[in-house]
Amino acid sequence: MSDGVLRRAGVPALLACALLVTACGAEADDGTDDSSAAESAGFAAPAQQTGFGDFAAPAQDSPTGADSASTTSDQSGTEATGPVHPVPVPGLAKEFADQIPAETSQVLVATSPTAASEKSTLSFYEFADKKWKKLKTFDTHNGSEGWLKDRREGDKTTPIGVFTLSDAGGFKANPGTDLPYTQDNRLPSSATVAYGADYESVFDYIIAIDYNRRPGTPPTDKTRPMGWDKGGGIWLHLDHDSGTNGCVTLDEADLKWIMRTIDPDAHPRIAMGPAPEVKK
Picture 1 (cartoon, rainbow, N blue to C red):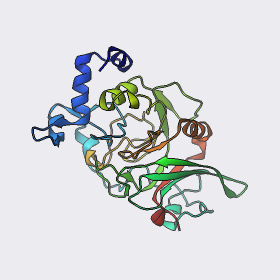
Picture 2: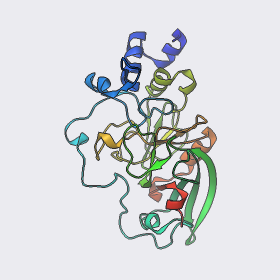
Picture 3: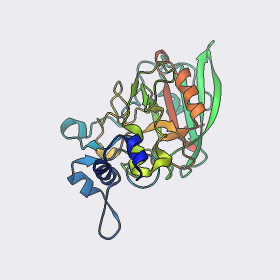
Picture 4: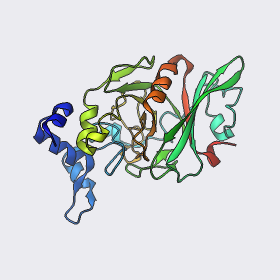
């Protein structure tokens, strides 16, 4: 790794090597990935674990105690509050429409043609004058192994469901979003050390999808209410022209438009998954 890359990463060479091992998993003697070695070192990668693609947060201490224990909730961030919205989002299947509460007036819908697809589209809906209006639709990528409701850490799938959108962040300064925004200068070093210079900008801007995370915290917060094995760190972030390990990715201009348009007072939700399941 060049001195210039290490200066951008903001870590000395020795620390860079250590992060590379702990974030991506240690390489076993037989050439296979051995995540237990990383665990024994006291670190664990988030949902974007090993292999090519996303790396949704810097390497983190493995959680213990309550943070790592499974809860009785099926999915963090999916529960509707109060009565169901009286006007269903156009084309949304009943199971998903019933998870949009009356208080919500902005909904993002991300779908792929099949459960195995890594290419998807994301539409932004807003409720006004007693009807939903589609404002824009974007080309996106999702998990390289498609979609899965009961996903696991490192399986390269994007979770199916309806989730709140409560927090944002990134390496760069707030581009104008009203969501709580946490700037984190560790993000490019994580991407660069784990995947090379081509990935150093993918976390310039982030919206956290509230799957297995604690809303009201920075996107990099390591708390996993459903347990570490369900993964976490599922974000909307910048695209890299390929399937992800769990996140949904967009071009920079598209993500910045969403960040500037999304309104915390609208109690925004994202419904996502394969079209045969999400749409009626």
